[in-house]
Image 1 (cartoon, helix red, strand yellow):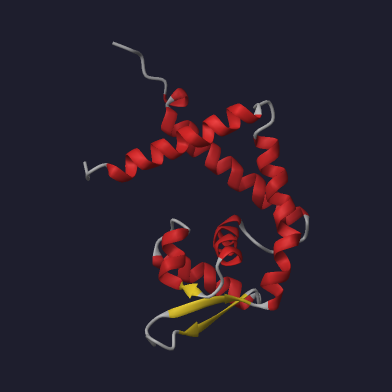
Image 2 (tube, rainbow, N blue to C red; image 1 turned 90 degrees about the horizontal axis):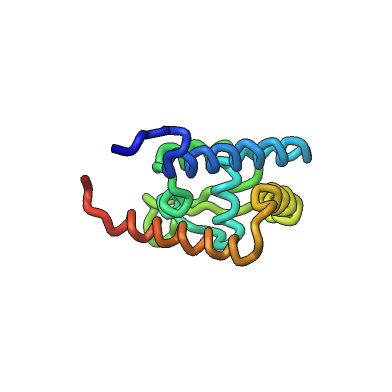
Length: 149
């Protein structure tokens, strides 16, 4: 029987990587004087790609539950970074839009994220980076296909 070392377990390594990336991104954003948290970053990156989407869709794309997303959007709204409007087609739906301030943050925040990711990938060749992306996509696909266990 193989011995089990939790520190070497694949899932734990992935979680630790995610936590450290989030912490380092948060530090980088804070050091630049931007009052945006990694949680808020996850929402902003989606809005920079597609502005004016339903809050529920935003939650799905950010891999967050709806109450957490609502809290994040509310904080961004208080900071003047986003606004919410009722969907004309369905008044129950809240659409989230970037304000001019939110749009202006994109070129200011992206370099911080790129720097953190580049530092995390130091020592990897371009082929290794591509292989890691490929393998993670396969894992994601495999997990999405799984029945509840």
